[in-house]
Length: 285
Image: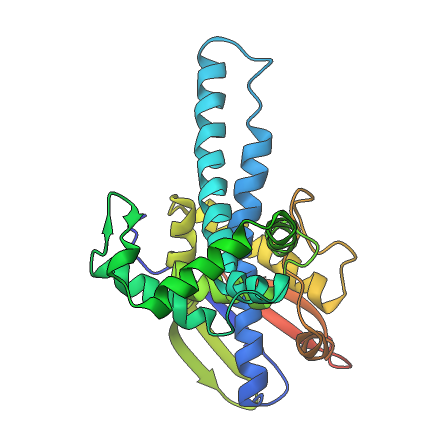
């Protein structure tokens, strides 16, 4: 399938037009569920590609497949960890010992500017060229980084916020999707408002994350996403079809939003695009 060819999915939200805040939260949940499903699939494929009991061509094939999916997972994990490190590390440095100036975000912006202006030579900062204030900021940050307890605390928090961490959450995941992956992962093709509302999305960008723009993978992604949504609603005790990974936790406001639904079902309309239908409580067919 051509990467530019639309791969459509419909989302039906019953019960009248939602508020702007509800709609934004709901679409964020759906988008993140679809993107997270690619990570679940990559994990499942990686775990299934076991080659150590094989031999010959079968072993080579399984090794190549495991390496492919392993690289995909490593790419996702590294990118997300870098995102949360950039997001939280300045604040963590500030509160870890109180010796990093409160304007640390501005300091990081200055460093980025200096990098762009090629103030670095052979990766060594020529501090003698810099303003005394900048030298002071650099000294304070380096002093804080040399504290073992500060680094340990920061690494612990970052690990807890990463994939499979206890504090892995949808708000961080959504920020990563928007910044590191792009804002067109869930491309709107059509909106059909009535007493309820139906969206038609092109998810080709999401399937491209796997590097395999094929229909079976699109079907798997949608199936996983339905499982995640059911988990958020509470109609499944185990929200993840893949036990190796867990989806990001949703904040209380989104728990209340999803609490108004009984379930989500998937409809196939005679070969047309799949349709995810949310079911309002007390309105189940």
